[in-house]
Length: 159
Length: 159
DNA sequence: GGAGAATACTACACATGTTAATTAAATCCC
DNA sequence: GGGATTTAATTAACATGTGTAGTATTCTCC
Image: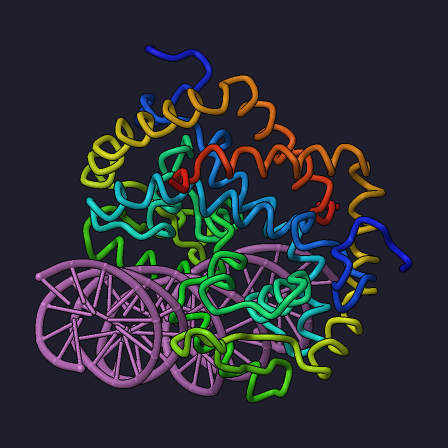
């Protein structure tokens, strides 16, 4: 036996146990969290990704272009294009051409989109309150801060 | 102004800032981590999900049924069915009927599958070593432990 | 042995992931 | 100025995933 912590009959001992896999831990925790948010999104006919876009637009203090949205939402540009088309069709966002660069499409929440965010937000906050209650507010904050630092450490430096 | 920490021109102040969103933090960190693993999986023509299944099978000390795999991989049963069909087609797994319950399909790594995992594992470990070096081994362990506890706290109790 | 529950699969509609190619506009450089 | 290059965003095409509903088979319990 080369290792002592692995299950004794594990076929290959040379691999990190599934439990200690970082991507898996992140995925499972996210799944557990999303279980509490998904019914809320479904109620408003929003997909996770659509909600991510709306959140990002809401967080931005100014209208932003598609490239900035790609960075903010961790979506790929082709996926984002489709999502924006849907949201525009639904009347939740507006697009205008950037005055100084006509290649760029500038996206902003429409009044309808603002109302939609405002409608979902309180329920989302209530879910957060529940999570904080069961895990601890400071503990959750600290976990999120660690996640940000890890993401930072793993991302390629912007030169 | 009701709040002081939000961006002054934020359209709706009543929502948690995007940066503090737990699902978003989990997603971004996972994306950052996966950037380092994806080339490795692509090299072996594996999708993330296929690799998750192989990892789960490898971690299991015994062959397990589809239901257990659903729990272990956080995949939905219909997705898992297709993935298993592909992996079986590729010769990476074997399926047999459970001796005591013919409804159940019991999945195990084939010798080919074991070799595949053994081939990918060292490179995966090397990537982990890089991550641990840049973030800290103990710090990473502690983060993963917190993720597990949060996931536990958020999951419905098994009665 | 029959009703109901459990397991896994199939079918379907829809959204997203992913790579490559394309369009249009800006920038560079001579 | 004008052609080559770069950039922003979209489109195309395909694979895959998500999520719901329904089905077949088998098991369990009365």
